[in-house]
Length: 184
View 1 (cartoon, one colour):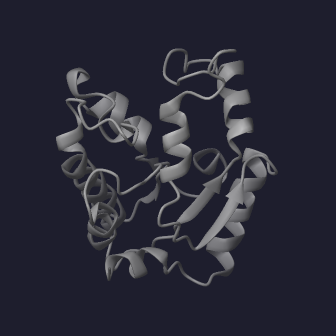
View 2 (cartoon, rainbow, N blue to C red):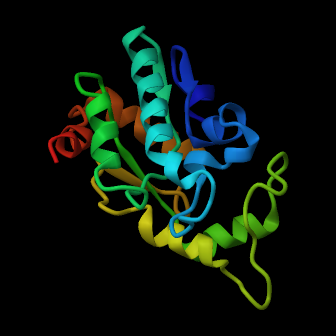
View 3 (cartoon, helix red, strand yellow):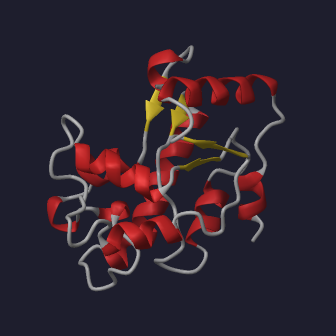
């Protein structure tokens, strides 16, 4: 929605782009790997894949392009990964938005399906309404939970979330969450 409605060029360099279009198939999902899967072939690469993604984000921003990044971030693949990523964005305009949604709504959306995303997301079954990887993700993705502000997609439409972000970017104050994380 940010790309569709904000002025200027907004590059999408989020997890889906890197996990599906950039990461070699044998290491997918790459940075999309869920917490608690240390045996996966991608697990040892996750810190460097995050670093590469953030270096790309920084390069785009330094060239004057706006960047929107949809990434569920957690530190389950090495201490300091999030802080390292924040340091890579030092000196750049960053607004860190926490996107919340209750697990029940997440599973309702996953189970309903999304055109073009078939087979990309774990769905529930009557025996297992919320798959363990989804539970781990929901638990770990908001740790440490340092954001400039938050939106809840169960309460707001995509358009409303984008409008809220637009107002925050326009009216400030500038983001500080990543600067805080970079110092840790």
